[in-house]
Amino acid sequence: MRLKLERPLVMFDVETTGLDAATDRIVELAAVKLWPDGRVEEKCRRFNPLVPIPKEATAVHGIRDEDVKDEPPFLKVAHGDKGVAAFFAGCDLAGYNVADYDIPILKAELERAGERLDLSDAAVVDAYKIFVGREPRHLTAALRFYCGKEHDKAHSAMGDVRATLEVLAAELERYPDLPDTPAAIDKSMRNPEHVDRRGKLRWQDGEIAVAFGRHKGRTLKYLASEEPDYIRWMIDSGVAPDAEKILHDALIGAFEQKDGGNS
Image: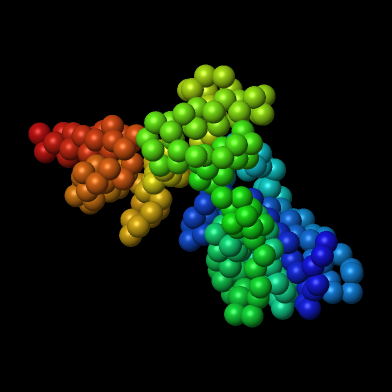
């Protein structure tokens, strides 16, 4: 690569029990350290997260509870001269979507182990942000990329609809592994951990939990019982429009449970 390194660069990726840095745990960490003198150092290690790995997470990375039951917990390998903290110390960092996902989770794991990931002087090279920055995701860019033509009627409603039809046709032609029904395409594009398409609700240990805001990590069952106004706000605000029935059902279930207990 054309990179000129002034200090080591660690490119890394984590597989986890979920997406929440505050509650989820790393089950696998892979890293390649590039040194300014040309040396390359590789590490890959699995960990016992000490909590069940949700089936939704296993569906993404394929790692099951039994695969890591004999591995050490992250805490046991975070310390020492050959520990995780030492491997990352004094390095710049790189990865794919690493700024929004991998770094926060690694930082949280190290802090739970009594170590820290010092980012004060670290450069972060995120290949995802380069990709998005250089290859814009708007319709004009999509028409140019997939169809090799300019969008000369951008932001006219019918012009945008016709351009989108062309882009979709080109995507179906370009990616033969894409399903050929709308329902199957929709399913293939969704994150299996998300309950709704916006990712405001997610599966957490077999239950549906809120994935944003001040109640992040709390289950709908808990909120319906203890903070029903918050669920009503979610419904009224259209936070998760394709999950409104789920939100209504949570409220009804909590009401019936309380009513049953009072009757």
